[in-house]
Amino acid sequence: MKNINFNNTQSYKDLKNHFKKIKNVHLRDLFSSDINRFKKFSILFKNQILIDFSKNRINDNTLMYLLNLARETNVKSVIKEMFSGVKINQTEDRSVLHIALRNRSNMPIIVNNSNIMLEINAVLEKMKYFSNDVISGKWKGYTGKTISDIVNIGIGGSDLGPYMVTEALKAYKNHLNMHYVSNIDGTHISEVLKKIDPETTLFLIASKTFTTDETITNASSAKKWFLHYAKDVNTLDKHFFALSANVKNALNFGIHINNIFKFWDWVGGRFSLWSAAGLSIILSIGFNNFEKFLDGAHDMDNHFYDSDYDKNIPILLALISIWYANFFGSETEAILPYDQYMHRFSAYFQQSNMESNGKSINRNGEKISYHTGPIIWGEPGTNGQHAFYQLMHQGTKLIPCDFIAPVLSHNNLGNHHIKLISNFLAQTQALAFGKSKNEVLNELLLSSKDRASINKILPFYICEGNRPTNSILIRKINPYNLGALISLYEHKIFVQGYILNIYSFDQWGVEIGKKLSQNIFSHLNNNIPDKDYDSSTKGLIHFYKSFIT
Ligand SMILES: O=P(O)(O)OC[C@H]1O[C@H](O)[C@H](O)[C@@H](O)[C@@H]1O
Image 1 (tube, rainbow, N blue to C red):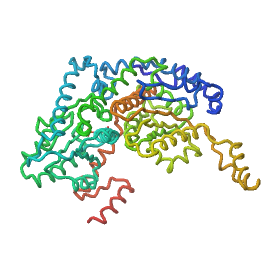
Image 2 (cartoon, rainbow, N blue to C red; image 1 turned 180 degrees about the horizontal axis):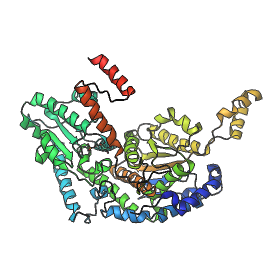
Image 3 (cartoon, rainbow, N blue to C red; image 1 turned 90 degrees about the vertical axis):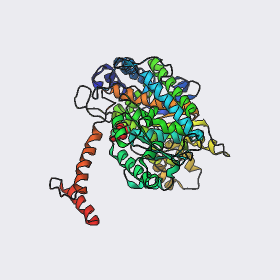
Image 4 (cartoon, rainbow, N blue to C red; image 1 turned 90 degrees about the horizontal axis):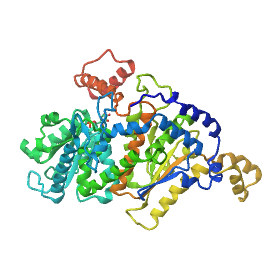
């Protein structure tokens, strides 16, 4: 992995110069001057996913310079390193091999002298049989009843991914009721426990490290609740499972060795939904569908590995993202799925992107002077249109957006879907082209208003436009296409981080708060006053204690 300082590259300098020329060019002009723009700036993946990036503030030269940046930093070489198991997560001395979890070709991948495909296949096989037993009703609870409910207890990557996918693929769901508990706020688990029956519920404790406080606290409360009914600790074996890389801690918690579904340190937490951490997905949609999900991701992996720079979807989207963050100075990106089932998609990629690329030290260990990872946020359309789109249309900030929608809905109800898609198209059109002064004026002249009142309100009606979007239209949100889409975004994040010369696969910043909360907990729990806190923390503790003592 080369450590090339992004802003020392020739391509960066070229882009800087080029930016001066294009920064005020309007999308209206870019479209009117090139009738082939859509054709040139869109790519179709496997006849299933259309990526239209033509509504971006780019022209042929922009793309040429951006692609030069990818070539100059040699993105292709780091892709090869990742896929072959080189330890590119250097701050943790680990390989980054979520692609191995969906390596449907089964070509050997060697880590520490052994072919990890053997272990991966063994765990997949174990998940297949177990999920078939639970779904078919063969697996019984401690009183002999079949299973009706699954509770996944995990947080971060051990929650966001499986929850997002289970929701996105709800149309493929079987009879099992799925629940996700993540927050240490006791309200979360309490509300779930109210809905379930200990005799017919399985608890999946998903934690790569099996040390995460939220997860262990929730799992302990679940165990206590369960044993209150079941009495006998031996019954735990029928109801408690661990999805983890830390077998020792799972055993210490009281999980039977056969109930541990393993994954490995080379699976990053935020990329773990493809591993045993995704067992709840399999229980929800069945193993066959899960295989299709892996197939989709694998096909996107192959596209990413094999495609030339100018045809490579994750590379192109990463470059466009860098273009806005580092030249236009935009700080955020919105992900806007026009699909209610995908309501957790933005939240999932918020973790994936912001934990990966929220860094300010480059790979040489130096402080960075340019923008790294963007702030990721978003909500499903059309809800967002009635909430935050105003700022996107007329605010002072430039917010590049990804619009995502299925062509075919799983719920054909009247004209709902065609209206949904009309909104999707209208919003991307409005953001790009806006409403000019003349258009507004002509409209207002048709009204009964006099010229003086027209002149007064005119400025407020104008929408500048020139707001960039990517449109991603997917034939249908099915397991294959969702797998491909997630893989696309994962690789986009990886390329962004690599070009920006940061390490994308660690998250040391998360640790500081964890440590501090342990200190505060021991003080609060033992009621020990601590004079070393700052005055704000002391004041807050004082207020808290005034109500509980
Ligand atoms: O799966 P676990 O080990 O419990 O970790 C859960 C989460 O906790 C940490 O705070 C990390 O920031 C996340 O990347 C991780 O997904």
